[in-house]
Length: 78
Image 1 (cartoon, one colour):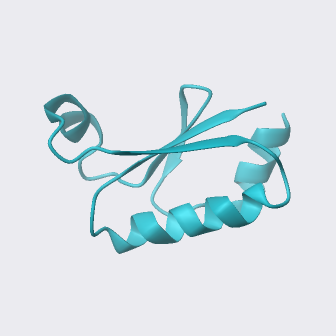
Image 2: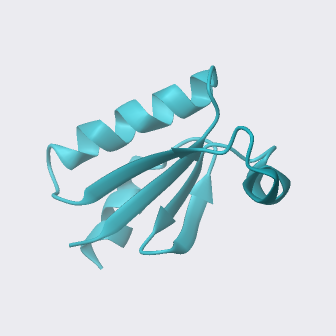
């Protein structure tokens, strides 16, 4: 089973939308979903600060910003 991490910030509307989209896809395809907030983590803020939401699949960056539903589903199935 694939493990997905979404790096977010508190109060980020784009992050909330991405999380909702991932939850919707999760109802179709089973995967582990973990949300991690980068607020206050200097290393993560430095790496991903302006890019959130950032999505990792099994530890590898898949994308950031808006979730491309079909691209994400294809990556999960691969």
